[in-house]
Length: 79
Image 1 (cartoon, rainbow, N blue to C red):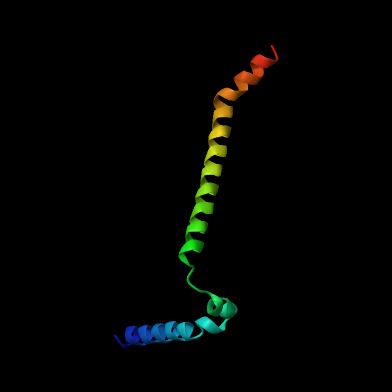
Image 2: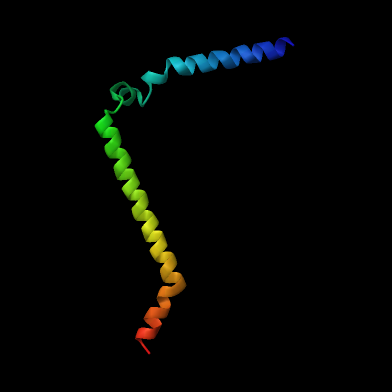
């Protein structure tokens, strides 16, 4: 039983040490400079991401359509 308690204490100690070093590692400067975006910044990011998703969706649909039916149009053009 004491083994389990010792292992859990060691595990807890390691977690606490990692939490203390969180802002001091390689990405510490980035974390210190990070801030919550304003409403305008957030809405702009959401809009650009949505447009990108729509563009990728339309491209996928076009490729799907071309693979299903578009080749017949090209085939008929050269007859």
